[in-house]
Image (tube, rainbow, N blue to C red; front, side, top):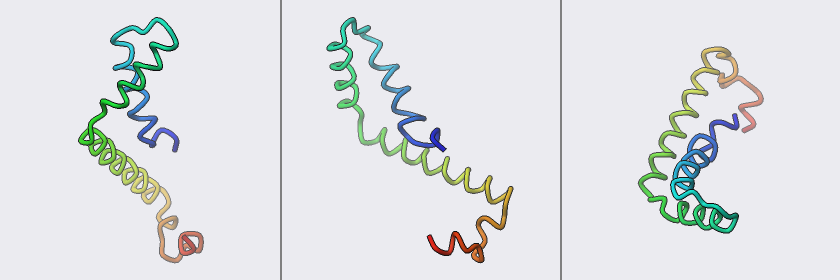
Length: 82
């Protein structure tokens, strides 16, 4: 699902909230703010985002498994080829 990716559930919203604090008025200022905000993202924040991503993937897998147990069966020929 596209909304599972860290870019969708975190980065774009985070950047928007940070970039527009200074209200850039030109395209150049906007680009500079985006670059500044990206450069200021700390490793611990990336770690938290990836941990959240892992939780989201696991929740999706559990939901699919609950709806269609055969999808995760070891006898499933599609999964056996992965």
